[in-house]
Length: 279
Ligand SMILES: Nc1ncnc2c1ncn2[C@@H]1O[C@H](COP(=O)(O)OP(=O)(O)OP(=O)(O)O)[C@@H](O)[C@H]1O
Ligand SMILES: [Mg+2]
Image (cartoon, rainbow, N blue to C red; front, side, top):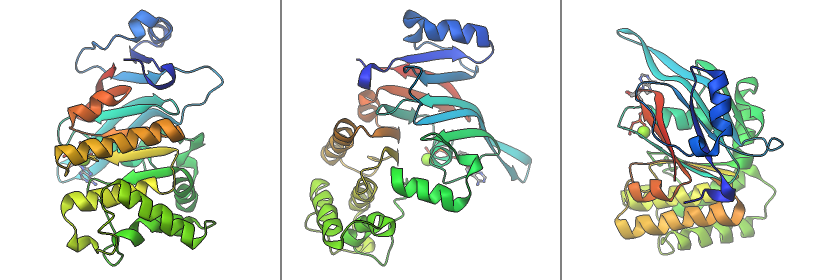
């Protein structure tokens, strides 16, 4: 299956830069997905030279201190993602997927390495500048939803646009209502999060992430709490946004249906990319 905008995947071992260039330039090898375990790989969605990727990650690591010394959560991740593509990040529980997503979105800071998001080096921005970049261009669906408990479903969805400013209140209200309809919650707009089921809260979180028409949607297990039928509807909604607005989708998922619809799958194992697959 061809990727969005004819995106192709190049996979190569970091060990040899010369080899990497050769492999990346060779379409037959570039589409190969078979890689050995335990070797660090780079994923790149190939693109014309004059187009900057929406996300470019180089040597990204995250380490934290723990009782036994230092815990390496992410180890030397390299990743390059083209505008308008869809990427599934998969891997076992605890492998580092949510940590990677948080770093890509500028919600967390790296121990070393760099992330360029929409051409901006996140490490060179302060917290306010990162927040402004996120609010203008990024939607994020957290694994734990993170809805505001004192706001209704409708108010939660409206919040990112209210904070950003510049859109009339009545337009924000109608856009938020429309999105809640689309995720099947038209009858729950006045409910507070504690009165919603887990799956309903997840759908509110998705509507909230969509409301700004973000250039990049990061979603951590977006279908994790949903039944199959609702999950399909949510997946369709995400890919419609990908098609209609050219939004880039970066999704952490255990859902094979969802991963298969993405242009590429990146597998994380113990904090390293061990496999990437173009579909
Ligand atoms: N701030 C932290 N301090 C210590 N350990 C952490 C911290 N953040 C994450 N970890 C550990 O890093 C590992 C990766 O966590 P992460 O949440 O990224 O995993 P995940 O792949 O998203 O897992 P899941 O599929 O269960 O959501 C886990 O073992 C976790 O316990
Ligand atoms: Mg996680």
